Structure formats: structure tokens, C-alpha cells
Image (cartoon, rainbow, N blue to C red):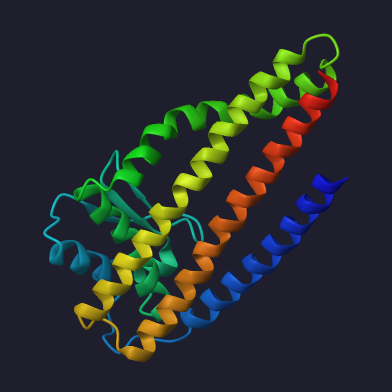
Length: 224
């Protein structure tokens, strides 16, 4: 019963934080930067200022689908960010370039996260079925649920390793926006606010994953 309450609480908090993030992003998407630079231009300048010349800045499909791909060395920006000349576009573009800087500087947490990607990608495809089958057959074959728990633990670990990666990328982005004079004080504060709420979505996701993991462990311990 306690785990159910925690899960519902996490879901409620996650919903509120997602709404706050989307609200902030939409708000700051309407505020143009004084520099007039597009997200693409911001990204390219930040990369060049950090002596990174082997990373491409590309336009990717999907809203808020912005990400850095270390395997291809590409900063992928959604259309609104790629062509946008708003505070939100500058903040997101700089944040994704923060990951490129992490890669270039061999940031340890990014390395750990990248090392886990193949396993987490594999486990996510079968995890749901292993967990369901494990719960249904726990009285006769409890180790199937245990296998599912191990797979889920890997995704939970991945979620927590993601936290320092995201917070550090935002820190690098904000420091560069300030030092390069790409954003004035007011714009810097707005960018910081937007990136804070974006980071909070990762925090809630990690906590939700942990609570769910403990819930499955409780089932295993109680019925095996």
C-alpha cells in the first residue's frame, strides 16, 4: 500500500513538473534574444569557443527531441530550437552543446552513461514482458521476476547516472552564455530557469524508477 501511494505521489509531482517545464519553455520561446542568434548559430559558436570542430549541428524531427549523439558526434536540435531566435532556443542549444563539451573533455559520468546505453536499450525491449511473466509465475519460478528486477535496476541506475550529466551540461551552458556575452543578465536568468525545470523532469523520473524498483523487490521478497 505504501509503495502505491509513493508511486501515485511521484506521478502527480511528475505531471506538475512537466507542466511547469512546458509552461516555462513556451514562455521563453516567445522572448527573442538581443543577439538575434538562432539555436544553430548559438550551438556552433559554443562548439567553436570550446575548440570543438568535429561536431555537426543538425536539425532533427520532433518537438523537444533535442539531444547530443556521442557516437555520431552530432548536436541534434528540434526545428523550433534550430531556427528559433528565442531565449529558450539559446538555452536548449547551449545545453546540448554542453554534452558535446563533456564528451570532448572525457567527462566521467557521460562515459558511464554511454557505456550503459547498449544494455539499457536491450533491456527496455524485453523488460515489460519479463516483469509481467515473472509476477504471473512467481510461485513456481521466482527467479524470472528476479531477472526482470535486475534488468529494471540497470535502467534505474541509468536514470541516476543521467542526473549529474544533465546538471553539468546546464552548468556549462549557463557559464558559456554568460562568459561569451551571448545572453544578457535577464536572458541568463530565464535560461537558468528553463534548464532548471528541464533538469527536474530527470530527477522525478529517477525517483519514480527507484520507487518502482523497490515495489518489484517487495513483491519478490513477499512471494518468493
